[in-house]
Length: 298
Figure (tube, rainbow, N blue to C red):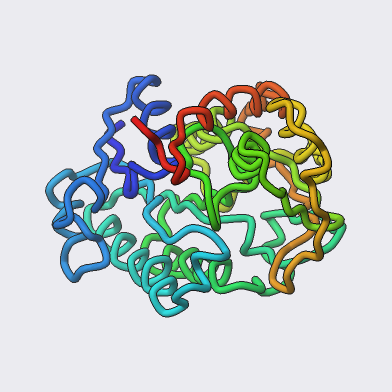
């Protein structure tokens, strides 16, 4: 299958491109970080890129990611995550390419202890602009590219490839902070089921290959762990004291507990293979390569 991945230089994109190529697919990546003229937000660019490659499937990962980054510039976030998606979906549909859209579990909003089932859809509106913009992105995909549309609602992927710092993944930051013996803020009562990036992209590949339509939660529902425990594991792996951990109240627009159903992705034969301990050990190897600015030093 010929697959076009937008945003292929991002965290998930790098790993997914390798996963798909390893499975024998022909993968073309587009990212404005590689070529500024491939900025899909600009008029006509999405159509030009799709026409030049004529893919069987477009996996649309390009986006502004994260709650904090989303709030920095709400208008830009809406443009990146809904406006750009509309252009990509229209272009994909024009060549009859299937659309696979990368969404997020943030579209569910805060449902407390209730499990979010993708077959029922979001229960409450998202409570931050990032989640809302991705929810709108799902809607424009349904409008412009509904044929065999798949929506991947990623939840808590982690692993090598991310920098450390403001707005970045908690596991990366906790390992970074513990290594540097810095204070580690942890939201009181926060709990997550983290999913190793290799398991995450394998799930995405199964959806692409099986032509499964509809929404899929892509993450874990079998490994919930308090974030305080994750912080303790980061300390243990780096030889730091647990006294670095500082419990703080979560901000108003932060989901404290996430409960997701993974029934649909498991029906495709997916099972997670890497547990949190092993995954954090591997991630620490990556964190050890980061420079003082939290960016890769190589």
